[in-house]
Image 1: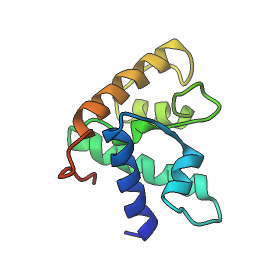
Image 2: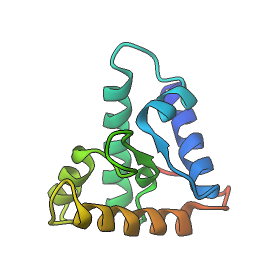
Image 3: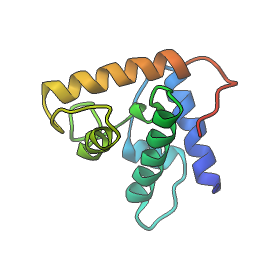
Image 4: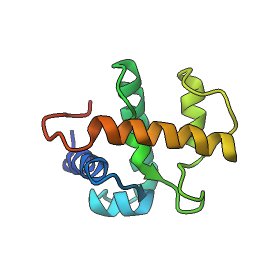
Amino acid sequence: MDDWEKALQRALLGLAAARRTATYNELASLAAVPPPHRIHNLTLRLEDLIRADHAAGRPLLAAVAVSRGQNGIPGPGFFQLLREIGRYQGPDRGPEAAACHAAELQAAWDHWGGDDDKEPA
């Protein structure tokens, strides 16, 4: 695992503990994701985390990552991946997507927040 991937895990856990979200760009900066393709590489790692958390029956730590342009919810790829793994069946945008994200985010905050012993995959 690269140093930035370890830093990303720490950043995600810190955000969950603080019950906060961060944009992809903020996360890329917090984790010092190197160029080129910082956001693309970040989202690939977030997708890996989603798959691992889902497979392990855990709330999705990656739910704390949101898109700047999507009114506080993740980008369409988040919802497309959730459909792929059978966790969500709605659209990529709109009230149904926002409700799905709100539920995933609350579960992540409740599970990952405040426990330093928990480690994402």
